[in-house]
Length: 162
Image (cartoon, rainbow, N blue to C red; front, side, top):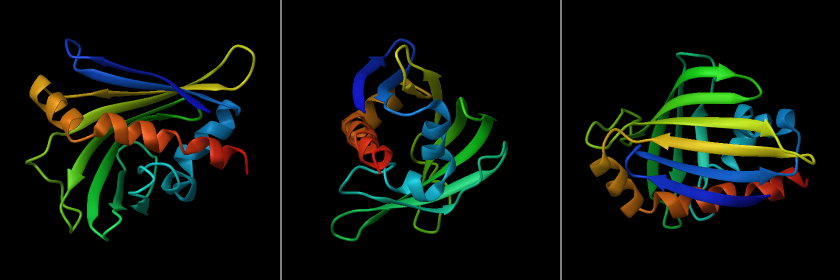
């Protein structure tokens, strides 16, 4: 699996990461649908994720935290907007405090993951993040979001070869 592109579009307020997966769309969907598999790649290698609540039904709340190398924890949440297994997942994505309560001081983004069959086999996975403002986009990119998601998605190949 290779991250093929990271495209930032400040005018559209989006950042899209595209990856080629050596798996069927159905197998690639399991990377999102199975919380134990999701934990193995959602956080960057030095900040692995632990999913506390995981239900990909529209309206459901998914909660997780990532643990840093020094034991620090960064909490997050998703509100599931739309699900079309095994091809599309749309969520609201936000930060939370240590109790899991959404942190209103940080921006909430919309994220859409799309899985399509690739010519010649495999799956093309696109993860598009829509930011609420240019300021929010710049803030999150400056915090390392691009490097973090690239490193996180880069872990998928190992999961798929098992």
